[in-house]
Image 1 (cartoon, one colour):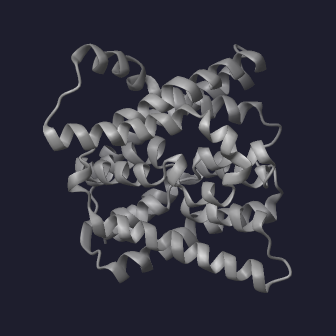
Image 2 (cartoon, rainbow, N blue to C red; image 1 turned 90 degrees about the vertical axis):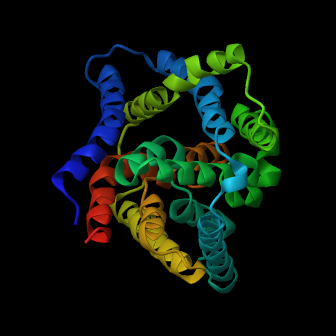
Length: 308
């Protein structure tokens, strides 16, 4: 049974993220502190420095030789099941298309693991769940993402200029080397990275708040499609993950972590690609913005129900 102390611990981990997002939203929408051009500069800093260094920090400090293979297998199986179903639908249905398949795949299988998942799951299930989230981040890094592979020809030029691609790859290489031979990163380099990566989480949420404030509407794709998108994000994704996890043998706390992480809000990176190449950006925009607003109560409901 979940105690009030457990709930308070979760809120302590997550509410600060929303404080950063609300401050950014208010800075643009209510107090007019930042202009759109200034917001663009802040967002660019976050995209080019804060988030890549945050990704590098988490990935490089994750021991690749002690990864939970069943957890990874469950995540991979979930993506393969959804991908197979969508490809089947796109070929057999008149309404099916590659664009819709990419959008539905993103909605159902690519949550905001790095920014939202790590602090939230750590608050719910302890430090070990944070390590599991890092393993998911490694699997979802830009070059390895199944969604990215589907549109690789379209996005390749953009992808090779994306600092997050390099930070993820370098992080994996460094973790393989450092944990294999016990090599520590020189303190001067580690602290140079830490001074920016420590701010990465707050800046990522601040950037999301700025993005929300600059949109003319929170629900950009209409109420019906928004409700459908939220159903895919918060019901279909966790349901498929639950089935995949049970099939590969996950039980107990690991099963709960797998289901809750699948119920996180929409990932930001898929939206960036969707906007760049005009693949239903209004739907993924709604998934990111509206999903963040309702994510906390939904994940808390999953947390409480799974803890009964």
